[in-house]
Length: 431
Image (tube, rainbow, N blue to C red; front, side, top):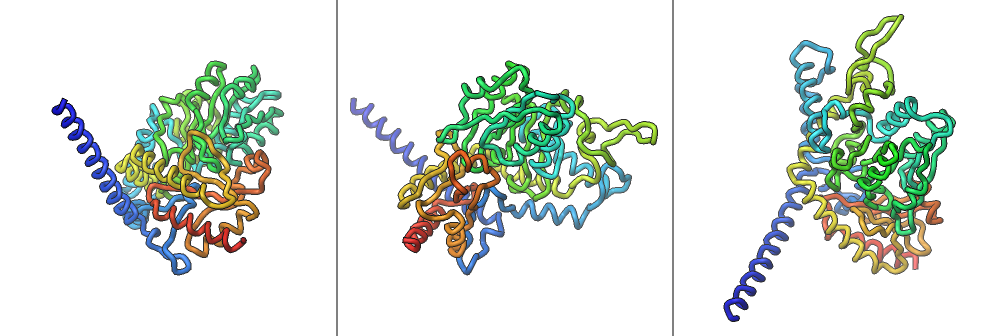
């Protein structure tokens, strides 16, 4: 009995020691990570920057900035068309970036990766091209109520063009989509379901794998907007079996003006080009034009090769840290933040789904979100206010907007403490 008791003490001691080592190592890692982002050393109104607007855009690590400078100072040249060294170098780096993205989201083929100007253009590409091929009069497009405008308006435009219908999939007051509700919306006319992986205004992580499984039972295609997901949680397009997946570069620590469209090869082969011009063609004459093979069929004109190459640098950077490590740390930040902010007098969370990632949206009784954001800004704290390009979400709750604090893996609990203290001052000022 004494030996067993002693063993238990030793095991407990080792576990606690390991926990302390892990915590200490994580603290050291966070400081190293913060040093990789030059902008985090900036001061706003002579106060250290606290940046909680990561859902709008993330800051850029030095390796991404260095890569952009490298491209423009060492081998800047139009790709796919030249025979000289710099053109070949830029071409190789761009196509290697395609391979990096393919591996990151586990696409089956690199030709399934299309580069666009961002998630918005990517959704427009799919809506126009898929819609032109597969959507007809009286067909139905199911779109969730929590979508960013960029995953609603393009489908409304296509529906109007084809005399089809957009069907709203409502969410619960907790900010969750229910699968039984979806099943009741599906009809023989349903052609595609458009839904985000993570809500930008609520933080909800949607059950995309289950959604896709239900859709495919009825031969319905699914587009997943992953703009708020790929930087926070592991994304495997083959495992979830989605037909299309899109995300933005600037939200995953890469440059602006670049984004990714994933589509299953057989669907992309069948869909018509989105835009016409150079590169997307095979042969051109006044009598006939034939189109290029994938993925180039959907990449008309001079591509944004510099930002494409820098996007690959961003993906490599977070891959080295580990997306699972990022997810665990950001989950810790989220729970700490929710636990802290719930003590603010009059504060009400908007979006309380059980499965969330690093977004806290809230309002404070009697205060306008814009006023809260403006005062926090004077304290050096950057948050987003307003509708967050999700007006249907605000209509659902009967509000005009929210304050949104969104976290990244370079944020800290100490910064959340500053947000808490700042909000207490805001409440005190207006009281």
